[in-house]
Structures are given as structure tokens and as C-alpha cells.
Image (cartoon, rainbow, N blue to C red; front, side):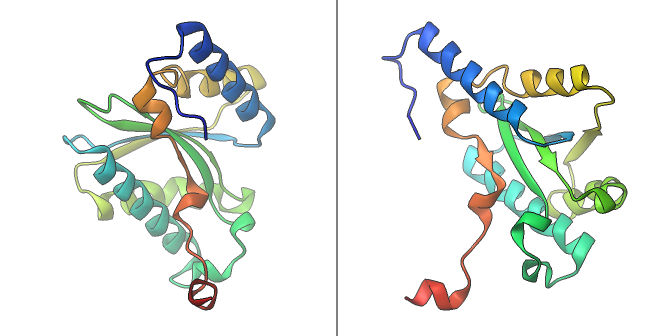
Length: 168
């Protein structure tokens, strides 16, 4: 991944933002979720909690052996941090298999509360292509900020290889 640094111009950063938005538009990520921790946290701790939420919600939907379900049939998201230095929260563009969407909406807050009691979330399912586009633009509004870019998260980075593959 290309690192944005203070050497890059504002124009370079805006071009990167536009490219990332184009990429998001090409993906089928029908849900928009804001996860707010409502607590002062480091970026490392916030990412750890996001990982734990990902684990808890999948366990709620598919049981404790959810990892046996192929990754492409489970929850996938791209999460963009905001206000890293003050009130860190994430905007997630998220895909849940269609038949589990209602269950996700029912269980998500409880799964997040198991991770951090003070946290809350807001789930939006855009009702039109224009609304979906707005959520993708909103999620990336601060991505040209160096810290935000360096710390956006793709849910697959939380997945571990099976133990036998780690040993090779």
C-alpha cells in the first residue's frame, strides 16, 4: 500500500481519495455502519476492538465455529477511521450475506456491547443508488488525511490462516 506523507501534495491526496471512491463503488457493500467507541482510545486499541466486534458478530450469526464457513460467505467490510486524535470512530462499508442481514441488524449492537460497553453503532441500508453513493463518499471524506489513510481496515486482515498453514 502506498504511504501518504507530507511530501504528497493536496492534489495527490485528492486523486488517491477519488481512486479509492471508484474502487468502493465497484464493490457490492450494501450496508453503511458507524461504530463509535465513545471513549478515548489509541488507534491500535480501536482496531483491536473492531476485530473483536467482527469476531463477536460472526459468532452471533453462525455460532462459535463460524470460521468453518468460507470467508466469502461471511461478513466483509472496509472501515475508515475518523477523529483518530479525539473521538475515534469508524465508518464501515459492509457486506452481510442477504439472508443474514436482518439478524445482523438485530445482533450487532449487542455484539459490540460485549466488546466495549460504551460503544454504539448506527446501521443504514441505503434505499437508492444515490444514497449508496453518498455513504461511500461520506466514509472517505477524510481519507486524504495521512493518519486516516494509514489506518483504514479491511476485515480480511483479521483472518488467521489455519494452524497447519502457520506451521509450514
